[in-house]
Length: 249
Image (cartoon, rainbow, N blue to C red; front, side):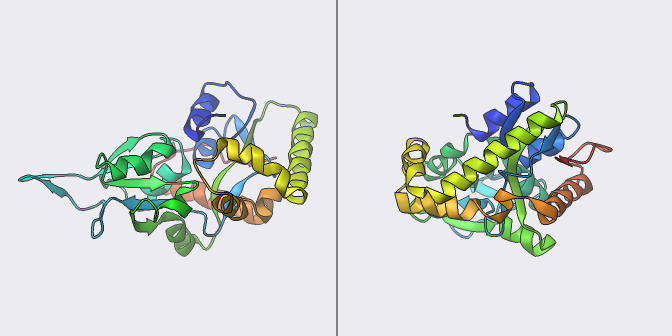
């Protein structure tokens, strides 16, 4: 089990033929990878949160340390994560960005080692318990600007794989999702093993939010959302000019 950014990085080095990874990484690797129609995290109300250690602050405003002004320190969960892409889309040039594993962001805010953090996964449910301040819901900004569900990540596969392999992987993933949906209690022990100190209630809130109809099948709405993400990233030059479109298998 790897942190999402470790998976992203290892896709760039060719370590995996099939992996769940960020759609930001997928856009950068669109010439080599395609997206399976099953297994994606995409939806409304699923976006990363921009959190702060204290209220009444903004990443675009310099902070005073003694008599000196400095740009805020903003932590993101990985260079190739969709969370980082969204922050750069909606807060271009704001703050000094650092990249750490997602599980280290809220502790860094509480310890005063960062001013802002782009939090993902269970951070949507636990930031109040950490006594942090929500500055912005980046997913909500996305929805307001595009009217599309937010594409976070999906199952990516090498385009050089043959059609029968792609079909077999897709079928196995679909069967696995269907079984997990129909045998919910059986999934809990495995999830507890990897959860970040979550209660079962929060753990299943996480599942119910991120596993939805687009996880079962991206369809034309999911494909359109990916096209929008690609277009917006190109508009602000976060993707190389002329980079290929992302293929949906």
